[in-house]
Length: 386
Image 1 (spheres, rainbow, N blue to C red):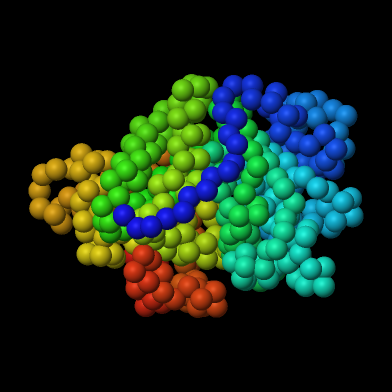
Image 2 (tube, one colour; image 1 turned 90 degrees about the vertical axis):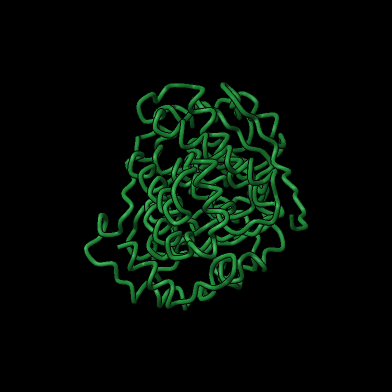
C-alpha cells in the first residue's frame, strides 16, 4: 500500500427528513446564495422547503446551472456573489450544481483583474481562498458533495476542464434518499454508471496489496450492480435509493483511492466527447471504458482477473477468457441500465481528429496509471469505442 493523507471534513447528514437540520449548519448572520439547476427543485417543492427552513436569514438565489455546468452561466453567479457580498453558498441539486458552486466559490474570491478560467487551467493551483459552501443532494452520482473536485465546461471554446482545491470542500452534505424518488430513469442510470466507473478508475490499475481499499471498492461495485437495476423498476424503494446514494458518495470521497494508484484516463477521454458532442457525462464514460480496458488488458491483467472473480464471479476458463468476460459483463451492465456503450449510438461522426487535438491542447498526452496512454493509443481507444 502506498503512503497517503486522507482528510474528509464534510459533515454528512444522511436519511429521511434531514433537510430539517439545515439551519443549524449555516451561520445565522451569513449572506447565503442558494444555487440550483433547471427547476426540478422548484417543481418538487424542495426549494420552498429550504426557504422555509432558512426563513429569517439573508437569502439570494441563482438557478439555471446546467448539466455539465458552463463557465458562461456560472460567471453570472460570480458577479451576483461579488455584488451582494455573499459569504456562504448552498448548492441544491446534483453533481453539476455542486461542481458549478465550487467554481463560484473560488471565482468570487479570485483576482477581479484576471479571468477565473485560469483556475481550471492551473487545476486549482491559483485558488487562495473561497466562499464556504454546503449542499443538499438530489442526484447521487459524482461524489462532489464530499470531495474537493469540480469539472466545468466553457462553451465558447469547447473546453471541459477540472480543478481541485481543499478550499471548496463542502462543509456539510444533506443526503436524503427520498429526494431522489422523482428522478427520471435516465438520470438514475447516469448516476449509477458514473459512480460505478468512479470506483473502477481507482480499482482497476495494478496491485499494491491494499486489501482494505480493494474490498471497499468491490463492495461498492457489487452494491451498484445489484441495486442499480432495481432503482429503475422500484423508484420509491427507500433502501435501494439509500444504498445507491451512499455508494455514490463513497465512490469518490477519497476513501477507496487512498494509498492506491489511480487511472482517470476514461474520464479525460470522456470529457472531450462531452465538450464536443454534448453527451451526458456517464454516457461518455460508458462508451470509453470497455474500449480502454481492452486496450490496456495486459497492464491491468492482475486487477482485471481479480475484478472478474470477485465482482462478476468469473472463475473458469483461461485468463484471456475471464478478462473478456469481465469487460463484457461491464458493458452488459451499462446496457441493462439503459446506457448505450458505442459512440455511434449517439453521434453520426466521432470527429476523432478534433478530440485528439483537444487532448493535446489540454496536455492530456500521457494518461493512465502508468502515463502510457499517448495520442496514438487515445486514437485507438476512440476508434474501438465507435
